[in-house]
Image (cartoon, rainbow, N blue to C red; front, top):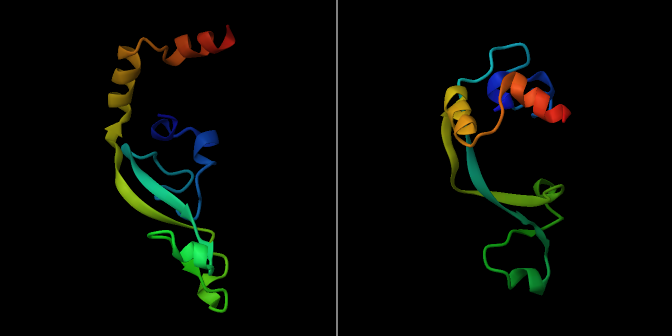
Length: 107
């Protein structure tokens, strides 16, 4: 929600080098989220080879140095939503918005 509002403190948490909307530009019209499966890479041991689907590192190869994990895209986690759609959900849940939200945070 805060990304769609263009909240500077929230946008500053994003990876600037990979952000599709650089600072100072208009915030996105919609956002979506994907579910990823993360797994740590393993050193080359018999145990590591016994784990199905794991990535085994060969540290004699320069491209393997610094690989800490792998990730695989699993499925959509949240479909593309707009700020209006999120506001409707927030209101439907009875959660405060705008000035009401600020007042609730001060309580």
